[in-house]
Length: 301
Image 1 (cartoon, rainbow, N blue to C red):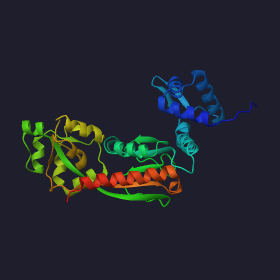
Image 2 (cartoon, rainbow, N blue to C red):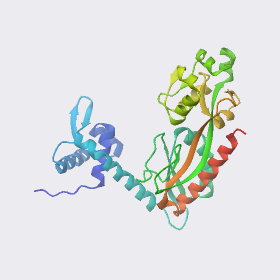
Image 3 (cartoon, rainbow, N blue to C red):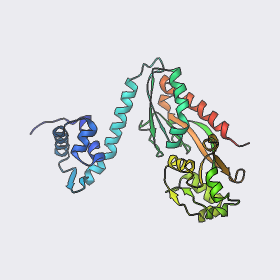
Image 4 (cartoon, helix red, strand yellow):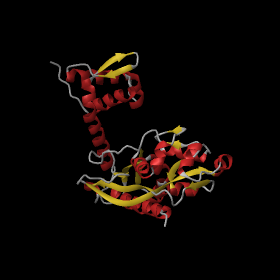
């Protein structure tokens, strides 16, 4: 019997095939030759004793066995990335790589000046910013630090409560000049509305507090907060965004100020094992300071 050993490269190839849907796509993504990818897949299927992918006109479709392996391979990938970040650092000083998981709108609109100042202070610190509204698993070290809109419950995580970031209803003043300004929430039914393709936690809270909003029909829907903000800025209609972001643009007008009180409960989180790691500690403190200052500038008295 031929002896062979599977290593991380094989499982990295496996994940790439899952992601790309073909051996050629995986090869391009990993910078490998297609024959190398084919050998990795052959070795994996030999070890499994069954096919991991089925060929179809849509590409390579994963079998049930492949799907069941995915979580374990992703854990390996997270561990490999965490190991690389740890190896990049001198444990005695704030240097090396810190991976931060944050929602798209916070990452693009709020964090850049905070991270710029952090790297000015610690020039040997590298930042990996994961822009996603999904929660990366800190316990599996998919990220070192996360900004979350839900309070963490895992005992192994350290969290800092940032507080509520207010959310308001905004429109571009040119849109209001053309279509008029709604005086009540019910008047929104006469306007073009920008909303969510799926309900986030604070949207559900809004609907619970303001039932009239449940009857509103959105004319532009997206699950991206950044896309919603872009449409508001482009005079596309009336939508919701963080008060601090809306207030930055003199052409945006807040509607129903003082009438609608919605807030994003915000927490800064990292794994307990990282609290004394210099690169993570300084990043955590800088993020806490910057986010608290941002929240303070947007809190309505």
